Length: 272
Image 1 (cartoon, rainbow, N blue to C red):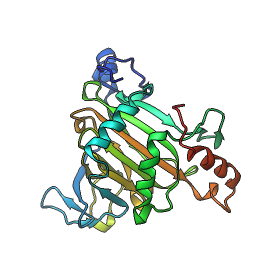
Image 2 (cartoon, rainbow, N blue to C red):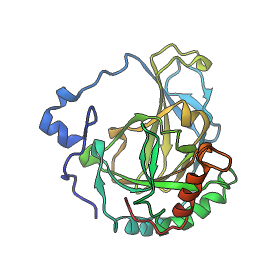
Image 3 (cartoon, rainbow, N blue to C red):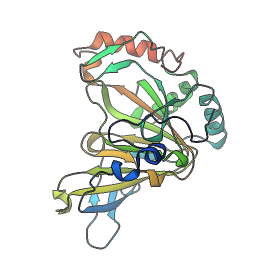
Image 4 (cartoon, one colour):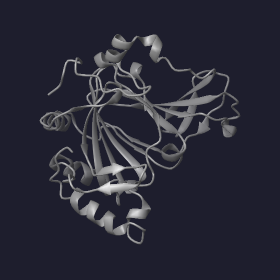
């Protein structure tokens, strides 16, 4: 069930939500902002990053696929109803989550199968629909993470790159309940755009019920985040991850990969 934003805080380190700010004081949690950030907006038709001011030129922004209306309004209602039947666990930065995937220690590069029972039954039709897209026809996810964002909790997620030891080339997300913005950031000079600033940000608008795929440079070079100010209403997203080449046929860990796929695609999963 949805909470009212008063759940216990799960923030650690520099991460924060509105509750921990009220307890610890916002000033103690502030981090240094970059001196200069150049802002762009992603245009899905031209696949260009378009400047928000007249001081810069557009540049190609590869590695993003966006499909609007991937699910219908009726499907969204049923998906959220089914998702909310499972337990939501508090996560950092004001989020709640449900994990359908193996237990992984990324630092030690170890995977445990003991509690992994596969993706949930409700996702079978979603995966089949994804595979009907030419760029996703061989997409076989082994992990699904549902995340809930609420404005009254100050929900967000910090800029980050997803692991690439276990997780493969494509990150696939279904965005539900509200429009939001994914912020792509690069903390280096962008030579192809002739920019000398400390950070470049590209805003990718995610309509409600859309499908987003990150791959290539958008997956491995640009960090992605959801800013607090871009959560205006409840947002639930389901992100699906595939295996890296090391866990596929011919890879160093293909035996483990085969076991993960067998479990995942049984679609009998419960949150771990």
